Image (cartoon, rainbow, N blue to C red; front, side, top):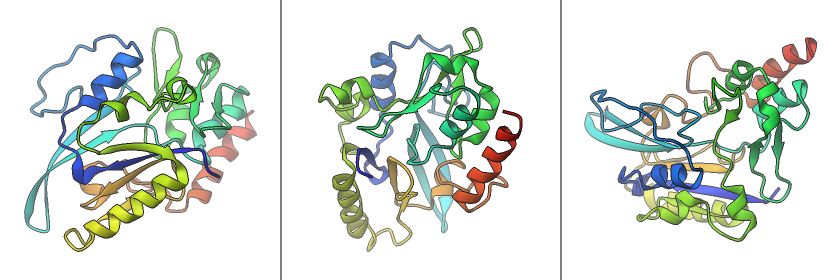
Amino acid sequence: MNGKTFFIDLSRCTGCRGCQVACKQWKNKPVEPTENTGSHQNPPDLSWQTLKVVRFTETTVDGKFHWLFFPDQCRHCLDAPCKMVGDSEVVDAIIQDPETGAVVFTDKSKQLNAEAVRQACPYDIPRVDPATKLMYKCDMCNDRVQSGMLPSCVKTCPTGTMNFGDRDEMLSMARERLAKLKPVHPKAELVDADSVRAIFLCPQPPSAYYKYLQFGDAGPRPLSRKAFLAKVFRPLRTFG
């Protein structure tokens, strides 16, 4: 399975939030009222108005202080749990583009059980507009990609953190970069590279950045992706 893939190198992220702003501008999302929460991160979470947010974390790893930046977005899973749940309720409410692999919410998403769809996501990504009931998340800028352009976040990134291209090319780039980082950052890893289209390279353990960065890190989620999908999908089919 080829298609397109993001490679996001967190060792190069400076927290500039250019990707976050570019996403909001391209998607023509409204300004979101915010307040000072004691962190440079703003807004504090994803929403139907903010499809990509750069998370800021101050933490200590192995006795050393780190200020970690994590541009959170949909992972575009190869086997998307949100789509499985959506298909059990309304066919084509959530589609997967056959050319790019992008997982896209359609206007039919307003007919879905939004909470069930969100709970199905191992990365806690989908959000709903309470007024229209439409569901939103990153769609890989699929309109841009289909026209031969880069996603807006990738086009804007000034440091090389955001990369995008054919999956085989991105996987090769990610593995080469990981090999270069390992001597300096022995705990560096590529997160869920075999199952998603937004692959993060983390110099520090993924859990240090955010609880939902890596599949299975947050809460009592099963470690097996196959078991997790079966657990989520079976009950919904029972009542479908």
